[in-house]
Image (tube, rainbow, N blue to C red; front, side, top):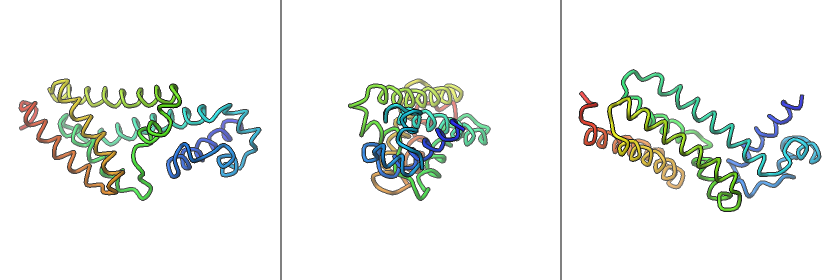
Length: 188
């Protein structure tokens, strides 16, 4: 029962934070939307920071799972790398796309809450490691991995600000050029 209530609170928090912003949603609004008492909310999550960290942890696990599921459909190492940008394109086209929740959280809370900043940095480092693994599988260099990760990060920010999912296609096209230039043995 307690787990169900905690999940309901986290579902509500994630939805509200992503739609309205982390700083804009107070504990009372969260409580009302989740349908729990303030006392119950604080008994499960003693601070807003605790809720934000739990939301980010869930988002991290979902991101990794969904990305890996998407990449699993590609047989070739280079195609798995390029599929990152296809995954982003699909995400950017969703009706509720408002950018990367981690970048949003860092922009709002990263300078105020070191634990939140650390969780966000860990998520971004995890993505960079994943890209590096994929690049290594394709025979590419660590420099290529860093460049491809930056393209993906930049596409997320650009798509959110411009409201145009084409940023993923542009990043994919740039990734193809980098892969061809820096790892010519991986193609063909």
